[in-house]
Image 1 (tube, rainbow, N blue to C red):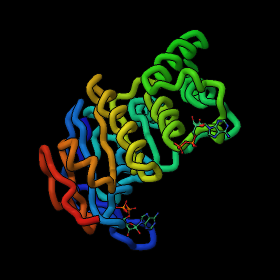
Image 2 (cartoon, rainbow, N blue to C red; image 1 turned 180 degrees about the vertical axis):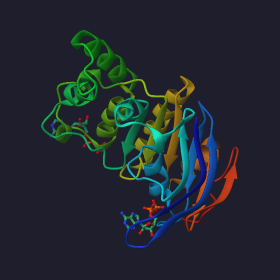
Image 3 (cartoon, protein in one colour; image 1 turned 90 degrees about the horizontal axis):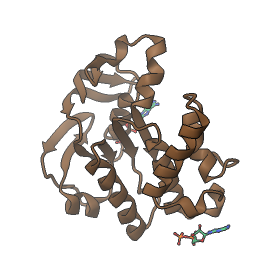
Image 4 (cartoon, rainbow, N blue to C red; image 1 turned 90 degrees about the vertical axis):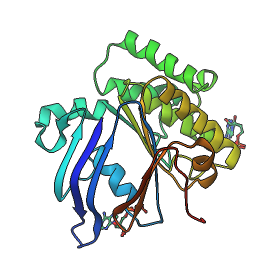
Amino acid sequence: MIEMVDVWKSYPNGTDALKEINIKIEKSEFVYVVGPSGAGKSTFIKLMYREERPSKGQIFLDGKNVEKLKEKQIPKLRRSIGVVFQDYKLLPTLNVYENVAFAMEVVEAPKKVIRSRVMEVLDLVKLNHKMRAYPDELSGGEQQRVAIARALVNDPITIIADEPTGNLDPETSWEIMKIFEEINCRGTTVVMATHNREIVNTMRKRVIAIEAGRIARDQQRGEYGYEI
Ligand code: ADP
Ligand code: ADP
């Protein structure tokens, strides 16, 4: 569960990126975050994985007030959230297997556990056969599948994705969306910022629209609602 209570975010340069955000996302929901460029979508997403902190208001993740967590509780919070970016952010010097395993090594999982879990998530994204390839040997869609495997490997409660199909062609975007749908069917909450009108209008999930820093719309089985 993700909850924001009267959340405001101003950046140090004075930009008011988010204003008066009140939202609740239940476990296992699939939510699209839409809105014009500069509306505040990335800021909204960054607050969820604690990349940015609110200027005012409270954020709860699974009932815990994120701002009140002690330093040593932060790694556990980070593990409960997997993040996927538009530009994949894979480590270029590590192969597919190592990129995914790295996320488990930093949380000091035993080697045997790492091996079986990495193979499991690579199987889910259908990339076992490329486990020894390096990122620059993969297509964009394949790189994003590695990034999704990495986000999933620690079995998070929530997957957060910021424009995950932004650099992909329509067909590859659909393959990526099918993977997110599968992940959601297995019980993981998915929150995704996107400009992909066709996908939002076809999938008909909950849509939260942000405009000029405020929630302009929050619809079940919603639509994209913009021309571009
Ligand atoms: P979106 O993801 O919808 O394009 P953002 O959340 O990236 O919107 O940006 C919302 C507003 O905050 C914009 O006016 C943007 O220029 C501003 N902004 C984003 N990040 C920063 C930052 N680090 N410092 C100052 N202003 C920022
Ligand atoms: P896309 O059409 O999705 O952009 P690419 O043309 O980049 O895909 O790649 C097609 C296939 O060729 C993919 O399976 C990819 O892994 C493989 N491939 C692409 N570049 C290389 C490379 N430099 N070395 C080895 N395999 C590659």
